[in-house]
Image 1 (tube, helix red, strand yellow):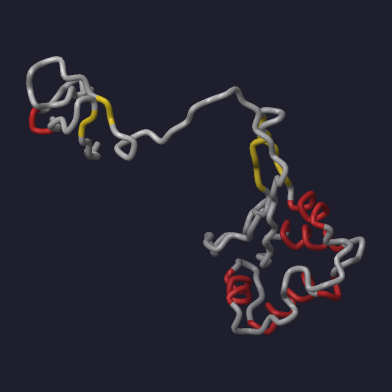
Image 2: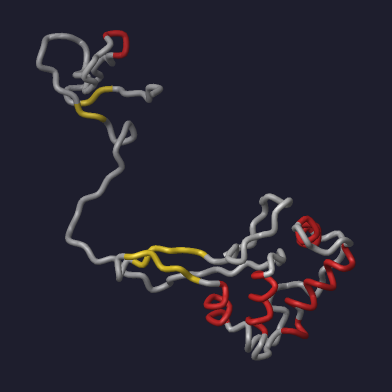
Length: 180
């Protein structure tokens, strides 16, 4: 989850701009993950360090400029630094209302320099035995040589003789990408 880097600055950000939808393979459905769920899972309410790395923020930082661009955002860089530190700074972390305060700012359309990584470290794929390979010219393309010519069979239903490739081996031929 990451705050957008590009958006229409003439309009306020939607209240769900930090929410994401992922595909849950176990339940075979899409799942909506809200910012509140992600923040609570990250432990932001228990954090005691500079969780979002904003303590060293100064007025020349890119994150400050991005916050100023948002509609209704702070008009000066100094105010943007203050707003970000008052929302994401160390003094605000580790409190029961931390996640709720961050979500309230995001819901109001305020751009905040948030980045949360959602990972599934123990994902397991169950499958039968399979032999898998990459298709295409890296592995060679097969062709039939049913006529005594020097050209590969063209799978194109409307073959163009100029595009036919000469065979370089008994069952392989050189291929190239053709424009659509």
